[in-house]
Length: 240
Image (tube, rainbow, N blue to C red; front, side, top):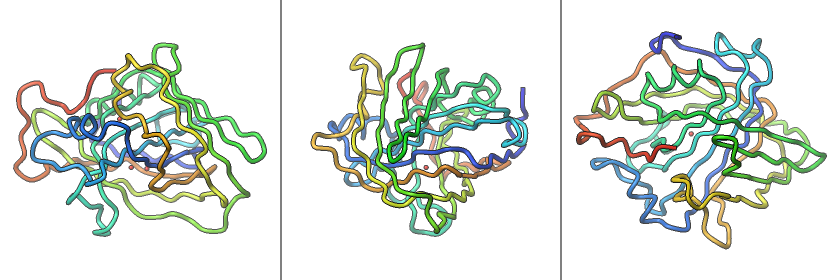
C-alpha cells in the first residue's frame, strides 16, 4: 500500500471537469456535514479523468477516476477566490489509488471511467460495479492556447475530523467548450442525488486533453469541526 503521507504527481491526464446546478438542492445540501456550508446555489462539481500510461504518474500507474462533490461557501483555495469542495463520491479503477485515497479520507469505491473523443465531441462515462451510472457529453474545439493553473481545495472526513488538502493543477483546456448533456443513469444509486436540473444549467467547466496535478503530502485539520459518529457526508457507492 502506498504511504498516504507521500505526495504524488500526475501529468497529462485527459480530464472533463465542470459544475452544474442540481435537480434536488436539498438532497445535495444534506450531503455536507454540519459546520460546513454548501454554495448558495448548491453547485455540484465532477471531474472525470483518465491516466493512459504509468509513466504519467510518480507511482500510481495508469488508472481512471471520477470524483463528484458539493461546492462549499467560505472554504476557498489559497487564491482566496476559487471555492473549495466536499467530496461525496470518488470512483477509482485502481486498487492502489483507491487505498491511497481512502487513507486520506476520500470516499473511494471501485469503478472505472472512459473518455472517448471523436472530432468535436467528447463522451465521458463512469461505471460502478459494471453498470454505467453517469454519462457526460461535450462539444469541444481545437486545443487552446491558454492554461488553467492554480490550486483546488478539497475537504474530506478522516478519523472523525474534517481535513483539508490543496492540490496544485496545470491544465491545457480546449477552446469552444460546451456541455451538451449530463445523464445520471441509475435512479437507485446514491450518486443520483447529485443529478442536474432540467434544463441543464452549467456553472463552469473545461475539457483538457492534458491536465496535470499533484496530491500534496499532508492533510490539515479544518478548524475545530468534528463529525458525529458514522457521519461522512457520503452515501456508499465524490475540484482538479
